[in-house]
Length: 103
Image (cartoon, rainbow, N blue to C red; front, top):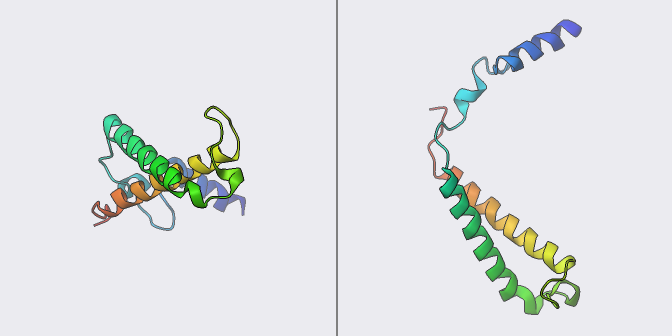
């Protein structure tokens, strides 16, 4: 059993997946977003997320609404969650638009 584990460790150290038999790095996209592209993606997620939060704030429970400007608590966490959700959706849509790196 130890031989199998060490063999797997050797494959992982060489970035080769034993089940696939090829370089794992070759399956990843070669070109990603630049730093400015990531910055604009984050900025867009924050703007859309905050807009959604303030549009949805009348129907949110009272504990999740912003009362004070610089208060930390549940409203900030709800806003952060919405912005994170938007960032995930934007990242997923940018990944779905790229070609499959395996082909």
